[in-house]
Image (spheres, rainbow, N blue to C red):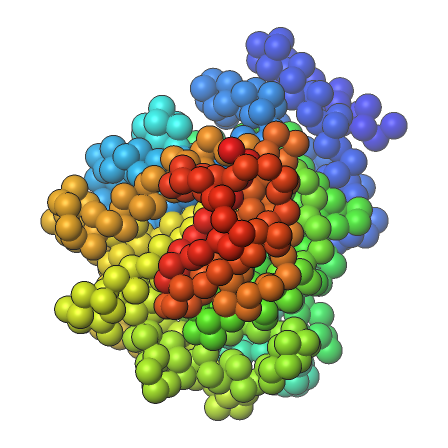
Amino acid sequence: MQLEVVLERAAQALADEPVADRTVFLARLERYWPDLLDGLTVAYGTEALSLAPRVVDLAVAGFRARPHDLRMLDLRRHVEPDWFQSPRMLGYAAYADRFGGDLRGVAAKVPYLAELGVTYLHLMPLLQPRPAPNDGGYAVADFRAVRSDLGTMDDLSALTAVLRREGISLTLDLVLNHVAAEHEWARRARAGEPRYRAYFHVFPDRTLPDRYEQTLPEVFPDTAPGSFTDVPGLGWVWTTFNSYQWDLDWSNSDVFCEFADLVCFLANAGVECLRLDAIAFLWKRMGTDSQNQPEVHGLTQALRAVGRIAAPAVLFKAEAIVGPAQLAHYLGTGIHSGRVSDLAYHNSLMVQVWSSLASRDARLMTTALRRFPAKPRSTSWATYVRCHDDIGWAVDDADAAEVGWDGHAHRAFLSDFYSGAFPGAFARGRVFQENPATGDRRISGSCASLAGLSAAGDDARLVDLAVRRHLLAHLVVLGYGGLPLLWMGDELALLDDDAWADDPAHADDNRWVHRPRMPWPVASRRHVDGTVEHRVWQAIRSAVEVRSAMPAMHASYEAELLDPVNPAVAAWVRRAPAQTVVALHNLSESPQVWPRWAVPLDGPLRDALTGAAVDDDLVVLGPYDVRWIVLR
Ligand code: GLC
């Protein structure tokens, strides 16, 4: 009954739209209305009944403002809903200023991305932040303006149009958990406006904050201890991250409506994927760690429904750095299956790559990855080796115990190893946010530095091994299943930025060591034979090309881990109807073998990466070699 009323109202509001557009919109509204209503009900209970029509009004307004070419893109995505799972997909993540200077500069660098085969570009936060420090832009002061030194909203729309023409989809962050203390909502809360005070979690004294903190983990224990900040004239404000990042109170449905509107606004600028930053933290609950609460998935489902009704070309990508059991929910389990995010970062795969390179042992990786429940077919992992963040050693104690290791000791080993303190370690990283209470030490550093390239100096043999490690890590993320994301500079094996601390606003955050400015003269060495840049670029480029023609690399076919019959080799199989691929990875600097009988394929074989035949009873893998074995 309610749906009929809502449809009728929407039809009237769209009366002056072309009839085809109106029809399509109403069909989507009818299809996704239950998702919207059910999602809102999870978070807001019976209030959802009055809230849902209000949200539909926002979707109608969003659709009315949607440019024609983006409405066409919506239709193209309707007929190819698995576009982002295609083996052709390759992601690239960068800071707009550090990559291209500003948005126009990024547009000018599109040929570089195209040369690499990029089809998806994540530009790090570029909406107007508070003045530095601003957590690399994750403290947003205005969601409707581009950072002034980067350009304008018009430049953003122009950039997305250029990217679309090249077949590159733009991803931007939607920072949902918090706003900068300088955001208008926070300013008006400080000024005493009740409407905006209710956008935040504000407490008159420490009574409740103290109770909450008994079960809250610390995100930045070193530089921003505690989860609450005393704001003069207001009270104790919930600030999970830095004291200048105020957590929003999502139990207030006005906050939901603000973000429903923002989803449409960014979609209409041509953004094709929204990275839901720190999504796990949205809902707070006393006595818990206030992460992964069921309401988070209800809220995501409702926001997703808004997107699917008003701008279905847009994907959602969950940034939830949580354990496997929790992570599965972000791609949708149970009632939320297929209704929340399309993509989620595979943090565990990333951690296991580094862990297994340090231990030269595939057993923990195999155990940990097998622990992941199957995800909905229509969703994908975002796989990556490095990103703008540090690496936290999310190694599960039970997984470690299963291979006979002690979880705590292994995590301590990894911190020692990747900070270069462990005798003989090839890595040269830096400790980030040491937590004396838990013993945690996270690690910053570029992929190449962590893989051994800095420590190699000019020793040709060590350089060779470091490059091989760097490439192995990238082949894992290209071959595991998902949308592979390259972090800017890794296509050239860039080392740490030694000048990272020169900017005083960065000096207490060593994640900047792996967020360099793109050294374009170094990048041009990708065409110079005999350089590391050339070797790495060519190898990645070629694997990307090979992959794009392999049916088994479609992201819906998941990796099944094979028993590591040789513990120094990580192996998995992916089975598509048209092709099966068996991927082998030598995690060590010594040659290894893998028996032919442990390759689950019948018939003559070849390695798709090199084209070479694989005929012998033992597959021989040189140091850090990778094979993608298929039938000949
Ligand atoms: C995400 C970002 C991280 C940022 C945090 C707070 O985890 O990746 O860089 O510090 O959110 O917004």
